[in-house]
Amino acid sequence: QAEDGIRDSSVTGVQTCALPISSLITGIEEFLGCKLARCGAATMRAVDPIASLTAKAPSFLIMHGDADVTVPIVNSERLRDALNAKGAKPQMIAYPGLGHGFGGASPEQKQAILGVTLDFIQEKAKSSPP
Image (cartoon, rainbow, N blue to C red; front, top):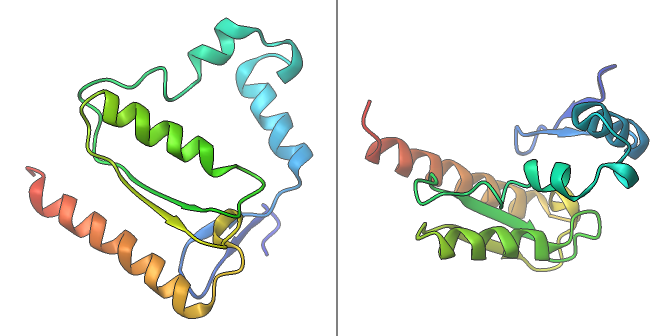
């Protein structure tokens, strides 16, 4: 793990954040300009990604471990449902038994997750104009 709190996963090649939750909350509060408990509904709506979705939403690949207790899977399900309501066609994959950041995944599962991600990116790159 580097000093900046970022560590590289040699299995997936994906960087994950290893900062303490207090540092993450502080960063969010600095971004919002208020303490989370005092931000107010208007501020929270303004930064809610679901509230800003439009019919022109790009392709989404939503991947989530169904045992994630840090960010419950219902958040990804809400995003998927909101995208569907806007006419987008998101792809969502729930990984049984995996936690946040695919915690608990075997090396084989991590390789498969990376493969799905790369396939999605390659498919979208082929169908997008230069």
